[in-house]
Image 1 (tube, rainbow, N blue to C red):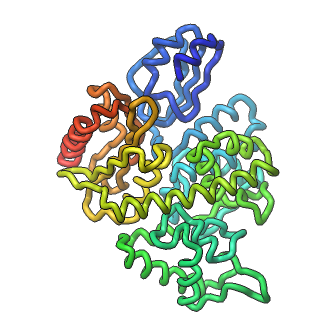
Image 2 (spheres, rainbow, N blue to C red):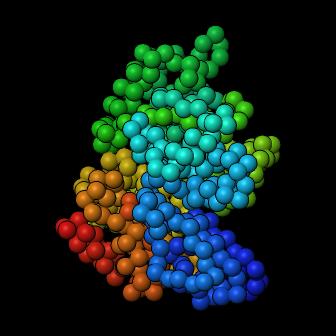
Image 3 (cartoon, rainbow, N blue to C red):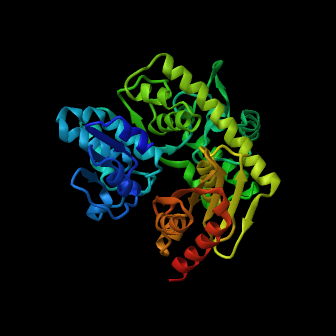
Length: 407
Protein backbone atom coordinates (compact mmCIF):
# COMPACT_ATOMS: atom_id res chain seq x y z
CA UNK A 1 0.00 0.00 0.00
CA UNK A 2 2.82 2.40 0.90
CA UNK A 3 4.57 1.70 -2.41
CA UNK A 4 1.36 2.41 -4.36
CA UNK A 5 0.99 5.74 -2.51
CA UNK A 6 4.62 6.65 -3.18
CA UNK A 7 4.14 5.95 -6.91
CA UNK A 8 1.62 8.83 -7.05
CA UNK A 9 4.14 11.22 -5.43
CA UNK A 10 1.50 13.06 -3.35
CA UNK A 11 2.44 16.33 -1.57
CA UNK A 12 0.56 15.31 1.60
CA UNK A 13 -0.48 11.93 3.01
CA UNK A 14 -2.65 11.59 6.12
CA UNK A 15 -2.89 8.22 7.89
CA UNK A 16 -5.87 7.97 10.25
CA UNK A 17 -6.11 5.29 12.98
CA UNK A 18 -3.03 3.58 11.54
CA UNK A 19 0.62 4.21 10.80
CA UNK A 20 2.32 4.33 14.22
CA UNK A 21 3.72 0.84 13.66
CA UNK A 22 5.00 1.70 10.16
CA UNK A 23 6.84 5.02 10.68
CA UNK A 24 10.15 3.53 9.54
CA UNK A 25 8.46 2.32 6.34
CA UNK A 26 7.08 5.82 5.65
CA UNK A 27 10.52 7.28 6.30
CA UNK A 28 12.02 4.93 3.72
CA UNK A 29 9.39 5.07 0.95
CA UNK A 30 7.64 8.45 1.35
CA UNK A 31 10.59 10.83 1.70
CA UNK A 32 9.17 13.34 -0.81
CA UNK A 33 5.75 13.68 0.88
CA UNK A 34 4.62 15.56 3.96
CA UNK A 35 3.00 12.99 6.27
CA UNK A 36 0.55 13.31 9.16
CA UNK A 37 -0.04 10.19 11.25
CA UNK A 38 -3.13 10.29 13.51
CA UNK A 39 -2.97 7.16 15.63
CA UNK A 40 -3.39 5.74 19.13
CA UNK A 41 -1.48 2.46 18.70
CA UNK A 42 2.01 1.53 19.92
CA UNK A 43 4.60 3.32 17.73
CA UNK A 44 7.91 2.05 16.41
CA UNK A 45 10.97 4.22 17.05
CA UNK A 46 11.49 6.43 14.04
CA UNK A 47 11.87 10.15 13.45
CA UNK A 48 11.83 12.00 10.17
CA UNK A 49 11.47 15.74 9.46
CA UNK A 50 8.61 15.15 7.01
CA UNK A 51 6.44 13.17 9.50
CA UNK A 52 4.08 14.76 12.04
CA UNK A 53 2.95 12.03 14.42
CA UNK A 54 -0.03 12.82 16.67
CA UNK A 55 -0.50 10.04 19.22
CA UNK A 56 -1.70 10.08 22.86
CA UNK A 57 0.98 7.51 23.75
CA UNK A 58 3.66 10.13 22.99
CA UNK A 59 2.20 12.30 25.78
CA UNK A 60 1.69 9.70 28.51
CA UNK A 61 -2.03 9.30 27.73
CA UNK A 62 -3.97 6.04 27.41
CA UNK A 63 -4.61 5.26 23.74
CA UNK A 64 -6.39 1.99 24.45
CA UNK A 65 -9.15 3.41 26.67
CA UNK A 66 -8.99 7.21 26.71
CA UNK A 67 -9.18 8.14 23.04
CA UNK A 68 -9.78 6.35 19.73
CA UNK A 69 -8.41 6.98 16.26
CA UNK A 70 -11.64 8.85 15.53
CA UNK A 71 -11.00 11.01 18.61
CA UNK A 72 -7.47 11.90 17.50
CA UNK A 73 -8.87 12.85 14.08
CA UNK A 74 -11.61 14.91 15.74
CA UNK A 75 -9.08 16.99 17.70
CA UNK A 76 -7.15 17.73 14.50
CA UNK A 77 -10.38 18.77 12.72
CA UNK A 78 -11.30 21.01 15.66
CA UNK A 79 -7.81 22.58 15.62
CA UNK A 80 -8.23 23.39 11.93
CA UNK A 81 -11.62 25.05 12.55
CA UNK A 82 -13.47 25.36 15.87
CA UNK A 83 -16.77 24.98 14.00
CA UNK A 84 -15.81 21.35 13.35
CA UNK A 85 -16.93 20.68 16.93
CA UNK A 86 -20.20 19.66 15.28
CA UNK A 87 -18.32 16.48 14.26
CA UNK A 88 -18.03 15.47 17.94
CA UNK A 89 -20.71 12.74 17.61
CA UNK A 90 -18.35 10.90 15.21
CA UNK A 91 -15.65 11.02 17.89
CA UNK A 92 -18.15 9.47 20.34
CA UNK A 93 -19.13 6.76 17.83
CA UNK A 94 -15.45 5.94 17.24
CA UNK A 95 -14.79 5.57 20.97
CA UNK A 96 -17.81 3.31 21.43
CA UNK A 97 -16.78 1.27 18.37
CA UNK A 98 -13.37 0.76 20.02
CA UNK A 99 -15.16 -0.30 23.23
CA UNK A 100 -13.61 2.52 25.24
CA UNK A 101 -16.64 2.74 27.54
CA UNK A 102 -14.46 1.53 30.43
CA UNK A 103 -15.66 3.95 33.09
CA UNK A 104 -18.24 3.28 35.80
CA UNK A 105 -21.58 2.23 34.26
CA UNK A 106 -19.82 1.88 30.88
CA UNK A 107 -19.06 5.56 30.45
CA UNK A 108 -16.33 7.06 28.28
CA UNK A 109 -13.14 8.19 30.01
CA UNK A 110 -9.94 10.16 29.34
CA UNK A 111 -9.88 12.61 26.43
CA UNK A 112 -13.16 11.13 25.19
CA UNK A 113 -14.88 13.12 27.95
CA UNK A 114 -13.75 16.35 26.24
CA UNK A 115 -15.41 15.20 23.00
CA UNK A 116 -18.51 14.20 24.98
CA UNK A 117 -18.64 17.66 26.60
CA UNK A 118 -18.41 19.32 23.15
CA UNK A 119 -21.30 17.19 21.85
CA UNK A 120 -23.49 17.95 24.89
CA UNK A 121 -22.67 21.66 24.76
CA UNK A 122 -23.92 21.76 21.16
CA UNK A 123 -27.07 19.79 22.04
CA UNK A 124 -25.96 16.82 19.92
CA UNK A 125 -25.75 14.19 22.68
CA UNK A 126 -27.57 13.02 25.79
CA UNK A 127 -26.81 10.07 28.07
CA UNK A 128 -28.70 7.83 30.51
CA UNK A 129 -28.23 4.45 32.22
CA UNK A 130 -30.09 1.33 31.01
CA UNK A 131 -29.86 -2.13 29.43
CA UNK A 132 -27.69 -1.95 26.31
CA UNK A 133 -29.50 -3.66 23.43
CA UNK A 134 -28.99 -3.04 19.75
CA UNK A 135 -32.06 -1.04 18.73
CA UNK A 136 -32.90 0.38 22.17
CA UNK A 137 -35.43 2.77 20.64
CA UNK A 138 -36.16 1.21 17.30
CA UNK A 139 -36.46 -2.59 17.39
CA UNK A 140 -39.09 -4.98 18.74
CA UNK A 141 -37.71 -6.65 21.88
CA UNK A 142 -36.90 -10.07 20.40
CA UNK A 143 -35.18 -8.51 17.39
CA UNK A 144 -33.19 -6.07 19.58
CA UNK A 145 -31.96 -8.99 21.67
CA UNK A 146 -31.03 -11.02 18.56
CA UNK A 147 -29.27 -8.03 16.98
CA UNK A 148 -27.08 -7.43 20.05
CA UNK A 149 -23.55 -8.61 19.27
CA UNK A 150 -21.53 -6.36 21.59
CA UNK A 151 -21.64 -8.00 24.04
CA UNK A 152 -22.36 -11.24 22.21
CA UNK A 153 -25.02 -13.45 23.85
CA UNK A 154 -24.30 -17.10 22.95
CA UNK A 155 -27.43 -18.87 21.75
CA UNK A 156 -29.38 -15.59 21.38
CA UNK A 157 -27.34 -13.18 19.23
CA UNK A 158 -28.48 -13.73 15.65
CA UNK A 159 -31.35 -16.04 16.77
CA UNK A 160 -34.62 -14.10 16.92
CA UNK A 161 -36.65 -17.28 17.44
CA UNK A 162 -34.64 -18.15 20.59
CA UNK A 163 -34.97 -14.58 21.89
CA UNK A 164 -38.73 -14.73 21.37
CA UNK A 165 -38.89 -17.97 23.38
CA UNK A 166 -36.82 -16.49 26.24
CA UNK A 167 -39.02 -13.37 26.46
CA UNK A 168 -42.21 -15.41 26.47
CA UNK A 169 -40.85 -17.72 29.16
CA UNK A 170 -39.91 -14.67 31.26
CA UNK A 171 -43.51 -13.44 30.96
CA UNK A 172 -42.69 -10.15 29.24
CA UNK A 173 -45.43 -8.71 27.04
CA UNK A 174 -44.15 -8.31 23.49
CA UNK A 175 -46.96 -6.05 22.23
CA UNK A 176 -49.02 -3.20 23.59
CA UNK A 177 -52.31 -2.39 21.83
CA UNK A 178 -51.16 -4.35 18.79
CA UNK A 179 -47.83 -2.53 18.53
CA UNK A 180 -44.45 -4.24 19.08
CA UNK A 181 -42.68 -2.95 22.20
CA UNK A 182 -39.05 -1.76 22.20
CA UNK A 183 -36.72 -1.88 25.19
CA UNK A 184 -37.48 1.73 26.02
CA UNK A 185 -41.15 0.76 26.53
CA UNK A 186 -40.44 -1.69 29.39
CA UNK A 187 -41.11 -0.87 33.03
CA UNK A 188 -38.25 -1.04 35.55
CA UNK A 189 -39.77 -4.26 36.93
CA UNK A 190 -39.81 -5.83 33.44
CA UNK A 191 -36.19 -4.82 32.86
CA UNK A 192 -35.16 -6.54 36.11
CA UNK A 193 -37.05 -9.67 35.02
CA UNK A 194 -35.33 -9.61 31.61
CA UNK A 195 -31.90 -9.10 33.19
CA UNK A 196 -32.46 -12.08 35.48
CA UNK A 197 -33.54 -14.30 32.54
CA UNK A 198 -30.47 -13.27 30.52
CA UNK A 199 -28.17 -13.98 33.47
CA UNK A 200 -29.52 -17.54 33.82
CA UNK A 201 -29.25 -18.10 30.06
CA UNK A 202 -25.63 -16.89 29.77
CA UNK A 203 -24.47 -18.97 32.74
CA UNK A 204 -26.17 -22.02 31.17
CA UNK A 205 -24.25 -21.28 27.94
CA UNK A 206 -20.97 -21.42 29.84
CA UNK A 207 -20.37 -17.68 30.17
CA UNK A 208 -18.81 -16.02 33.19
CA UNK A 209 -21.48 -14.68 35.59
CA UNK A 210 -19.89 -11.22 35.29
CA UNK A 211 -20.29 -11.19 31.49
CA UNK A 212 -24.00 -10.41 31.76
CA UNK A 213 -23.17 -7.05 33.39
CA UNK A 214 -21.85 -5.94 30.01
CA UNK A 215 -25.52 -5.68 29.02
CA UNK A 216 -26.04 -2.74 31.40
CA UNK A 217 -24.50 0.68 30.97
CA UNK A 218 -24.74 4.23 29.67
CA UNK A 219 -26.84 4.87 26.57
CA UNK A 220 -25.39 7.50 24.19
CA UNK A 221 -28.22 9.10 22.22
CA UNK A 222 -27.20 11.26 19.23
CA UNK A 223 -29.86 13.98 19.26
CA UNK A 224 -28.92 15.29 15.83
CA UNK A 225 -30.14 12.04 14.26
CA UNK A 226 -33.78 11.17 13.57
CA UNK A 227 -35.56 9.10 16.25
CA UNK A 228 -36.32 5.49 15.26
CA UNK A 229 -33.25 5.30 13.00
CA UNK A 230 -30.27 2.95 13.62
CA UNK A 231 -27.84 5.85 13.98
CA UNK A 232 -29.70 7.57 16.83
CA UNK A 233 -27.86 5.33 19.33
CA UNK A 234 -24.06 5.69 19.47
CA UNK A 235 -23.31 1.98 19.83
CA UNK A 236 -25.79 1.10 17.11
CA UNK A 237 -24.12 3.61 14.78
CA UNK A 238 -20.70 2.09 15.63
CA UNK A 239 -21.96 -1.44 14.93
CA UNK A 240 -23.29 -0.30 11.56
CA UNK A 241 -19.92 1.21 10.54
CA UNK A 242 -18.00 -1.78 11.88
CA UNK A 243 -20.12 -4.20 9.83
CA UNK A 244 -19.51 -2.17 6.64
CA UNK A 245 -15.74 -2.42 7.14
CA UNK A 246 -15.70 -6.09 8.15
CA UNK A 247 -17.89 -7.10 5.22
CA UNK A 248 -15.71 -5.28 2.69
CA UNK A 249 -18.13 -2.34 2.18
CA UNK A 250 -16.20 0.58 3.75
CA UNK A 251 -17.51 3.12 1.23
CA UNK A 252 -21.05 2.69 2.62
CA UNK A 253 -19.88 3.48 6.15
CA UNK A 254 -17.93 6.46 4.85
CA UNK A 255 -21.02 7.78 3.04
CA UNK A 256 -23.10 7.55 6.23
CA UNK A 257 -20.40 9.32 8.26
CA UNK A 258 -20.39 12.12 5.67
CA UNK A 259 -24.15 12.59 5.94
CA UNK A 260 -25.90 10.19 3.52
CA UNK A 261 -29.16 9.19 5.23
CA UNK A 262 -30.88 7.55 2.28
CA UNK A 263 -29.62 4.63 0.18
CA UNK A 264 -26.38 4.15 2.12
CA UNK A 265 -28.27 3.71 5.38
CA UNK A 266 -30.47 1.00 3.87
CA UNK A 267 -27.46 -0.82 2.38
CA UNK A 268 -25.65 -0.62 5.72
CA UNK A 269 -28.61 -2.21 7.54
CA UNK A 270 -28.60 -5.12 5.05
CA UNK A 271 -24.82 -5.45 5.45
CA UNK A 272 -25.18 -5.57 9.23
CA UNK A 273 -27.72 -8.40 9.01
CA UNK A 274 -25.26 -10.45 6.95
CA UNK A 275 -22.44 -9.60 9.36
CA UNK A 276 -24.41 -10.86 12.37
CA UNK A 277 -25.26 -14.11 10.64
CA UNK A 278 -21.58 -14.66 9.81
CA UNK A 279 -20.46 -14.09 13.39
CA UNK A 280 -23.07 -16.55 14.69
CA UNK A 281 -22.02 -19.18 12.15
CA UNK A 282 -18.32 -18.71 12.92
CA UNK A 283 -18.83 -19.01 16.67
CA UNK A 284 -20.92 -22.16 16.25
CA UNK A 285 -18.15 -23.60 14.06
CA UNK A 286 -15.40 -22.75 16.58
CA UNK A 287 -17.26 -24.32 19.48
CA UNK A 288 -18.48 -27.43 17.66
CA UNK A 289 -15.22 -28.10 15.82
CA UNK A 290 -13.25 -27.78 19.08
CA UNK A 291 -10.57 -25.69 17.36
CA UNK A 292 -9.24 -23.84 20.43
CA UNK A 293 -5.92 -25.20 21.70
CA UNK A 294 -4.67 -24.44 25.19
CA UNK A 295 -0.93 -23.85 25.62
CA UNK A 296 1.04 -23.06 28.76
CA UNK A 297 0.33 -19.29 28.68
CA UNK A 298 -2.10 -18.68 25.80
CA UNK A 299 -5.05 -20.11 23.91
CA UNK A 300 -4.58 -20.44 20.14
CA UNK A 301 -7.20 -20.63 17.41
CA UNK A 302 -5.93 -21.49 13.92
CA UNK A 303 -8.80 -21.19 11.44
CA UNK A 304 -6.94 -21.11 8.08
CA UNK A 305 -9.58 -19.82 5.62
CA UNK A 306 -12.63 -21.11 7.54
CA UNK A 307 -13.13 -17.63 9.02
CA UNK A 308 -12.76 -14.34 7.12
CA UNK A 309 -9.56 -12.59 8.27
CA UNK A 310 -11.55 -9.33 8.62
CA UNK A 311 -13.80 -10.98 11.24
CA UNK A 312 -11.30 -13.14 13.17
CA UNK A 313 -10.66 -10.27 15.62
CA UNK A 314 -14.37 -9.99 16.42
CA UNK A 315 -14.60 -13.73 17.08
CA UNK A 316 -11.55 -13.54 19.36
CA UNK A 317 -13.06 -10.61 21.29
CA UNK A 318 -16.30 -12.51 21.85
CA UNK A 319 -14.49 -15.64 23.04
CA UNK A 320 -12.40 -13.70 25.58
CA UNK A 321 -15.16 -11.34 26.79
CA UNK A 322 -17.97 -13.84 27.40
CA UNK A 323 -16.00 -16.07 29.77
CA UNK A 324 -16.20 -19.11 27.47
CA UNK A 325 -12.42 -19.51 27.89
CA UNK A 326 -12.10 -20.57 31.50
CA UNK A 327 -8.35 -20.16 32.13
CA UNK A 328 -6.57 -16.85 32.83
CA UNK A 329 -4.94 -16.67 29.40
CA UNK A 330 -5.19 -14.44 26.30
CA UNK A 331 -6.33 -15.86 22.96
CA UNK A 332 -4.19 -15.63 19.81
CA UNK A 333 -6.18 -16.37 16.64
CA UNK A 334 -4.87 -16.65 13.08
CA UNK A 335 -6.59 -16.64 9.69
CA UNK A 336 -5.31 -16.70 6.12
CA UNK A 337 -4.88 -13.32 4.45
CA UNK A 338 -3.77 -12.32 0.93
CA UNK A 339 -0.34 -13.17 -0.48
CA UNK A 340 0.46 -16.26 1.61
CA UNK A 341 0.26 -14.16 4.76
CA UNK A 342 -1.68 -14.84 7.94
CA UNK A 343 -3.46 -12.26 10.05
CA UNK A 344 -3.07 -12.59 13.81
CA UNK A 345 -5.66 -11.20 16.24
CA UNK A 346 -4.72 -11.22 19.92
CA UNK A 347 -7.18 -10.45 22.72
CA UNK A 348 -6.91 -10.29 26.51
CA UNK A 349 -8.94 -8.99 29.47
CA UNK A 350 -8.53 -5.82 31.53
CA UNK A 351 -7.43 -7.94 34.51
CA UNK A 352 -4.58 -9.42 32.45
CA UNK A 353 -3.44 -5.92 31.45
CA UNK A 354 -3.41 -4.90 35.13
CA UNK A 355 -1.10 -7.87 35.78
CA UNK A 356 1.39 -6.52 33.25
CA UNK A 357 0.29 -8.06 29.95
CA UNK A 358 0.77 -5.85 26.87
CA UNK A 359 -0.28 -7.67 23.71
CA UNK A 360 0.76 -4.75 21.49
CA UNK A 361 4.33 -5.13 22.73
CA UNK A 362 4.13 -8.95 22.41
CA UNK A 363 2.90 -8.76 18.80
CA UNK A 364 5.60 -6.28 17.84
CA UNK A 365 8.42 -8.35 19.38
CA UNK A 366 7.12 -11.73 18.20
CA UNK A 367 6.41 -10.75 14.59
CA UNK A 368 9.68 -8.99 13.75
CA UNK A 369 12.00 -12.08 13.81
CA UNK A 370 9.51 -13.92 11.58
CA UNK A 371 9.36 -11.39 8.71
CA UNK A 372 6.16 -9.86 10.07
CA UNK A 373 4.78 -6.67 11.56
CA UNK A 374 2.76 -6.39 14.75
CA UNK A 375 1.43 -3.91 17.28
CA UNK A 376 -1.74 -2.56 18.89
CA UNK A 377 -3.01 -2.04 22.44
CA UNK A 378 -2.40 -3.98 25.65
CA UNK A 379 -5.66 -5.98 25.43
CA UNK A 380 -6.25 -5.92 21.66
CA UNK A 381 -3.43 -6.28 19.15
CA UNK A 382 -2.53 -7.98 15.89
CA UNK A 383 0.12 -8.87 13.36
CA UNK A 384 0.73 -10.00 9.77
CA UNK A 385 3.41 -12.55 8.88
CA UNK A 386 4.19 -15.30 6.35
CA UNK A 387 2.08 -18.41 6.89
CA UNK A 388 5.19 -20.63 6.94
CA UNK A 389 6.36 -18.90 10.15
CA UNK A 390 3.10 -19.36 12.05
CA UNK A 391 4.11 -22.07 14.56
CA UNK A 392 7.42 -20.44 15.52
CA UNK A 393 5.58 -17.14 15.97
CA UNK A 394 2.96 -18.74 18.27
CA UNK A 395 5.69 -20.39 20.33
CA UNK A 396 7.43 -17.03 20.75
CA UNK A 397 4.14 -15.34 21.71
CA UNK A 398 3.51 -18.04 24.31
CA UNK A 399 6.96 -17.44 25.82
CA UNK A 400 6.64 -13.62 25.82
CA UNK A 401 3.18 -13.72 27.44
CA UNK A 402 4.56 -16.09 30.10
CA UNK A 403 7.41 -13.66 30.83
CA UNK A 404 5.10 -10.64 31.10
CA UNK A 405 2.52 -12.27 33.37
CA UNK A 406 5.27 -13.82 35.53
CA UNK A 407 6.91 -10.44 36.07
